[in-house]
Amino acid sequence: PVEGGDAAAAYQVKNESETNNYLFVIHEWWGLNDHIKNEADKWFEKLGNVNVVALDLYDGKVATTREKAQEYMSGADEVRIQSIIDAAIATLPENAELATIGWCFGGGWSLRTALQAGDKTGACVMYYGMPVKEVDKLKSLNSEVLFIYGTQDDWINKEVANTFK
Image 1 (cartoon, one colour):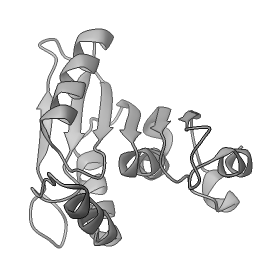
Image 2 (cartoon, helix red, strand yellow):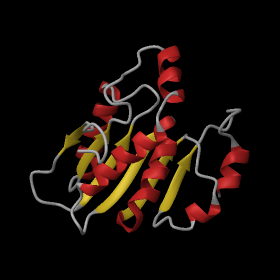
Image 3 (cartoon, one colour):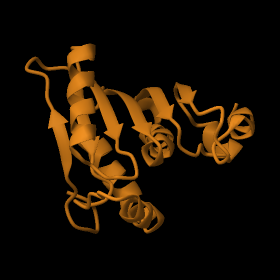
């Protein structure tokens, strides 16, 4: 359930044994498609003692063309997305340890999710994605960030990475 809105959806791979370790997977601009679900499955297998939750920040919309992906990303409602993330965080047990990972659109939201989760966050991975630039917000970050970006890109480039650093 999402406070003040429609319920959100996610793809979850739950550990058979009880664990307080969680990984939130944040999709690219395409939406929560089969590729991201496969990534969630792969991380579950690699990490072992973890529950993996791939959040759907587009409420079921999945793009199959670059034009639709651009439309979905440009039209993404930040308030709704933050509410979805808050709802996902609210499902975590009190002593949960959370890591976040995302690609492109999801890379930026991986960092924002890590910030929203506060002291539950222990790790954040951004594959591309625009980082948060406000230093006051970043001061509350409770984890290291692995920020991977393309060296030949004009948008998220070395200058953006250095500013973030």
